[in-house]
Figure 1 (cartoon, helix red, strand yellow):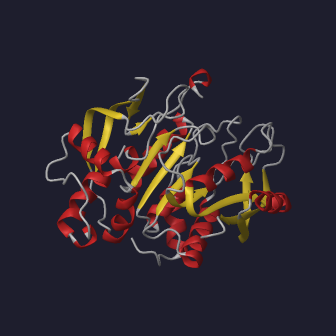
Figure 2: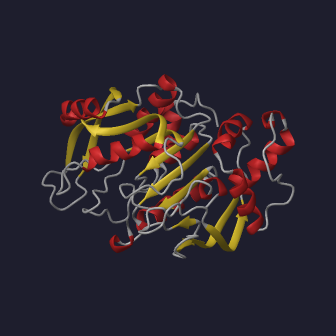
Figure 3: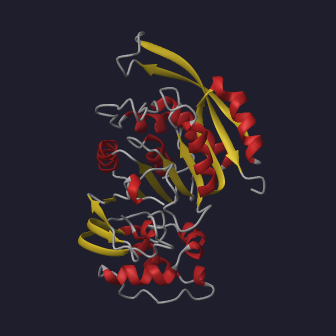
Length: 214
Length: 125
């Protein structure tokens, strides 16, 4: 499929995808809304040419919005990883419904020691990591570090805008480079019982983080 | 599980395992799905692979026919080779079966096309 696919067409495809059947609090399973995913993927392709023909990893794929979107945008091959069997089952349904064939999934813990033979194997890593707000503070930074180890070019990751200065500090510490390449609004529906309001509007950043030599 | 994925997978995070590579494949169900052919992508990916492991894996699941045992120089210009590599890397998929760690014998089940690489805390280095 063409890399110049229109943003609206991409969003339309992503709206067809099924979401989590029963989101798990422990894993902070929030879906990536189609609008956010479409704008992110469109930006990643049109500004950085980082999807079409690339080897892409979707880390913590959930129902697979980012990975399937990358495949729709012309990725050479996509690997999707998640720790949760139920999420992967929905992922597989989405793959079948969309008739996308250049995508493969693995059930594994992204934060456990490496299961890959090589570091920096993937061209592009995409992720919408847990925000690290519910009893697992710092998990978003662990995802980012693990992702950097696996990619040769750039990691594209969604983070709450409120953590921007913290991320800036961290990437300096790690000796890598990065910047916010899009500012988005995440209309988070009341997924869990502890959410008092019907929905909350959260500002999120699409970060591009990369090794200095790339 | 496609063989491009298998080529990268190790079980080196198991306690006491040094390389954990390559994982042996036991397949009870293998399918072939059509994937768009992208020679430029293949030309970039093939140098990253352990070709011998791919060759052995393909043969172990009955899809190694016509696949050369080594990658020739200037393979990018050989369309017949690229098409064969495309099929073996991206179109052949193990649906059901298991992977086995060459050192510890630990098995990783493959169900509905997805290998389960999760380990218990006691198994990890």
